[in-house]
Image (cartoon, rainbow over all chains, first blue to last red):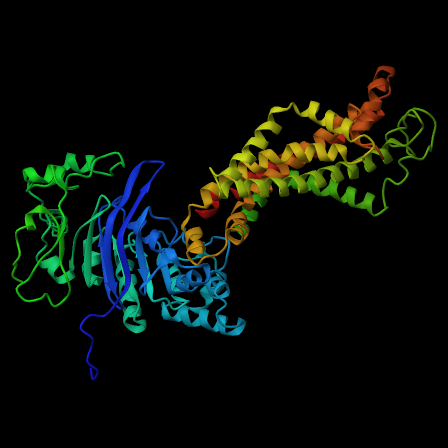
Length: 334
Length: 279
């Protein structure tokens, strides 16, 4: 590169202290979550089902309203935007869902589904819109004749490609993939991940990739954030995370994917740990009940999010762990 | 999706019988409207209570009017009532149901459910009588009574469907680009309730024709023209005197048409079943 890169790129998306609870079920979905994604990079958001990952995606898309916190897109708080600004912002971020069949309108042709965002945002005229649908169909690796078909006439892999095409047709800056490959066969999973990666390289899209599957995250993410019961427990560059996870929960998660049976894991507790009501106290660590290295303090005091200090500044980004174990640790070899 | 439904309907013998009956009756109705059939329904063309003959296939009534002509004209009346009531109540029910379902558990939903609850709790014939009495002299009183009471079932069904559909991800995708609710409802939600609406509309059609006969029999129905209900009302005295013309003609027509429609509605329900359609 000829031009010197700035030391830190500004984040495209920044989430600050986001909290959300579902009042009808009195369930805490998101609990003071903060993270940011640098433009052009991929954040992998990991966690068990019910950890609050999808709620974060929906809050960013402004499909649900959080109780508190801020979401900044290109430095602007999306909750302070007027409808005009919001319309412009919606064009710049898009969502791909888990279930490809239900994410496409069953009684509309693929072409109608793809044209809708263009018509809604008044991008181009009729001819250029049709041209654009043809282009995008090629970009996601499909043939023109799928445009006339209905979703049920396509395979799930094709449907997911269409869902990605619909998300990309407004040329967004941010793409949120909410378990976008979870319901696909392994071989198709690999194809879709490859497609997303190549599109990211080609178009420079920033990606929030949500998955419960660490193997998938490992393939695609630059940074990893681990969620448990609505809280972020660890946040680190992907390399560090996969080579040297710090939080006890991250270690347990990784031992699952490495097919090493975790030693004496209190499985019963995991079931109990599903979900937390608003009435329950948060004066302890949310992972305390299932933690194998629990200390007395874990039941009494909620740990703060500690930044792991490396002797040399970590080249790939900051590393946060929300655990009492790391209170005193200020140096940690890379 | 619709192609598969038609194939399933075609292979259903009872459904096709029903469809055939409905088509024959509607052709009669069209012929009456266009002036080809049943125009002599009010002409006195014979003597009182003539029996079956080649000039009067079903005989004549008290005034010497031809019962066949009156039956044919009654078919058109039945379709008029059926189509008008079905169209209006389905439209009203769909809009109300869609609003209630989309804003479920909101104040609009509460209001609509309350209205539906009130209307459903009034005995229907009492209500129809009250409306007919209140709107004396207005020829549409009966239609109005039916529309006001029949929309509630459609609304309840559509409300449930909308609540189910709005949780699908394509609705979230539409909301994610900021599409206004009204567009989402009409473009993405309601088209997916079409199969339910079609079946429900055919049920309402049957109920409307049925109710017209009962209300006309009670003297609350058709004010102008003739209907099967009016013919049956006439026949109530004639049968005792041994004249079965009105009774057989109107009763058989009503029975055959309603049976045809029920067969068709059943077959439609099976053919359009979304679980089978998506499989």
